[in-house]
Image 1 (cartoon, rainbow, N blue to C red):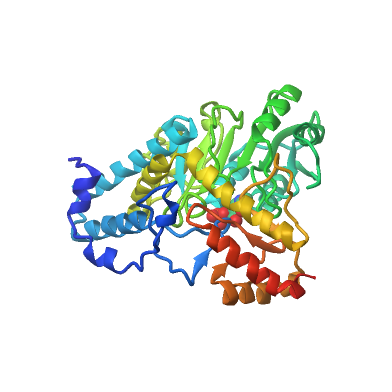
Image 2: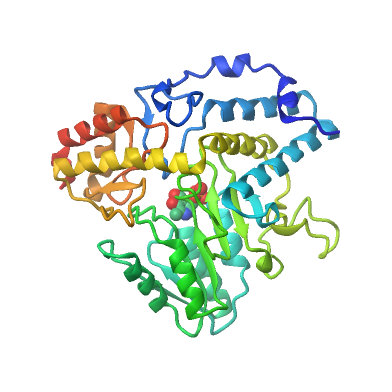
Length: 410
Ligand SMILES: Cc1ncc(COP(=O)(O)O)c(C=O)c1O
């Protein structure tokens, strides 16, 4: 039996969940969505999407109602319905990324998605893995662990944040590839510097240099923030976390694997719904999400988060987030503070970082929060990563608080 998502949600009432949300009034987001509402208050404003995003109340409510519906009935029909929502979520996510649902695995987070690739791509003694030195540990030291097991080597390269042009960046990536390189892996937008790599140009140039190289792109800081067309980026795999910019359920992530590579990548975990034989794998990239029992309600509510992005459009989300980030950059420039993140528009993102001594990190974020009610992070300096729910007022408040605490920046 399959029933529509809306009908299923009616199975249990929503009043208790909805009324428990201290709804953040998002009227000022009219350009993006009139109905976008969040549970945070004006004294607790997140500006830290690079780490974790709040879920919009429609996702929180849907998640809670799926869980309540399951508690009401754990019948196989009810569970099958929820699993059906997983396929709906997969299709919606795939459509927005310009891929086929068969190339999308719904895993638990970017760390897991990265490690399916890192541990699952076959490596042999003598192979060389090339990494951007700004990669996250799940896409960096994880490669060292696999390479050590096989006798392969790992080489890292840098891209100075003051690099001037897209061509220069592309040349640095191509120069990093040698005849021995079998894998290259990089982060689409760095969580350490906010540097946005020109992924499409990089992948195309690497393919020209060496056609049979495997290219992995870590999209933890792009999925849900940037309008991505994986059809135009010639990557072999791409990862992301729903709980970051996608504003989706926590502990849900995605892994895209290009169809031609699905067979040759070993899954890290083999469990239900894999069948009884080696050959009885779930279809396509689903073989990478055969992880046993999941939080089915969270998986299902990924579809609700996707519906919100469809309504706002990925291009609309990107434009709104970047507009706020640009205002933030301008305000900070006017203060004359030192930036870690670049101001070159070819490489800017919604991750904005200013320089601050590491030892001041905790005190600084605490003081900024006390003075402005804005939540920032002490990552690579003072990191602010505004998203669609942030307003110009939030930017002005955080800039004023930084001005007040500028003695802690050096
Ligand atoms: C670039 C990048 N990759 C991977 C991760 C890991 O994400 P998660 O903790 O959701 O697995 C992060 C987390 O900040 C990240 O910034």
